[in-house]
Length: 343
Image 1 (cartoon, rainbow, N blue to C red):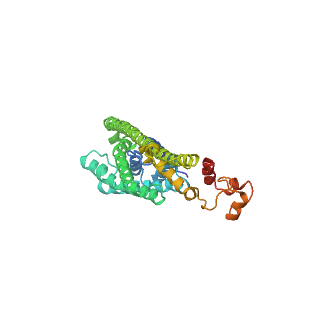
Image 2: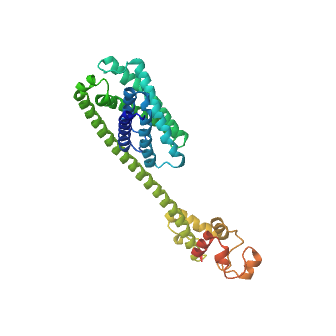
Image 3: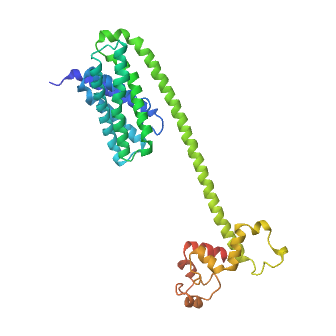
């Protein structure tokens, strides 16, 4: 016969884990996969201590739901769907490890009414067990190239701290409502639940504010980098435009416009500029300069650009076929642009 009396514990732990996990990841610091406060880990440990190893499918189901949502929000593709299964396995193994350590150092069922029992459970067994999920989760992300190796240390620390703080707050809260023996936990419900709930709310608010600050920092950094890149692009294209304008001025001016007298020379500031040097280079070696910029060999020039005859151009340079289409079809786009400016 199916054990119907087990449906409620399974459903309760699975739903509690999924709800706590989804809330924690939705308010996590960007990029949002690792939460610095994860109460679901405390729910899993308390469920394992109260109901025993048979509750592990509920923990697995709740973790799968939580991490599937995290994968969809993080934009992971292809192998990213392996992550929920690996992280859920790590959550189950962490709950097993935490329960084994707690039973080794604290006898259960236990009312946790002594300082020694509380310290051994929440400050020794819980932090040690949190090493399991953090190592498996971050290791999976790094091996699948979903997390840069240089960020693995910070993510591992964040993951471990989130699980440890979550156990510190959520495990006593879970024991207050479903812990055994009931006669020991029921009278202390308000005394324990109220301060822990207030602490959980304050930590959640702090995490939301820190997430906002981090988002503003990332947005400011993106805008600063985008502005710097835009200025570099504008500067680079300004240099190219200056060279093309210099080339146009060099070919449109009469050949003898510079005389030996200093009164006819351009201003000294212009003579020192890159545009003037480019113009002088065009006047001294026009064919070689255009060949350098346009990528067309110096002896081979489009017939209509320099006033050559088609027959002469074809004879001197077999590369250029005869006919009116020489300047448009045989030239590259870069050569056509420069030839259009110099025509």
